[in-house]
Image (cartoon, rainbow, N blue to C red):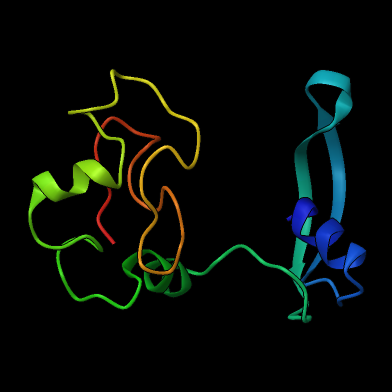
Length: 115
């Protein structure tokens, strides 16, 4: 949320979040450990809602995955337990979906999340 607000400010947009940081920690005190958040609903950047994420992930498709219904076709688009060697990978190593978005499936957990 802090990143979204900073990006919004940089581009002259009204921040979407009201963010009051009450505690910081981590390396160099940059990590937010506690904060109060209010949704302002400005024109700025925001974390996608579930519906927005699904829309972006599906890229206009109605199939099991944005790449189709076959699990083997997904190998070209996503890292998951069967092809990742148990580690995350750099964004953009696989093909993007129909909207040009990379890594909308897989790459983080041991399994694979469907759109």
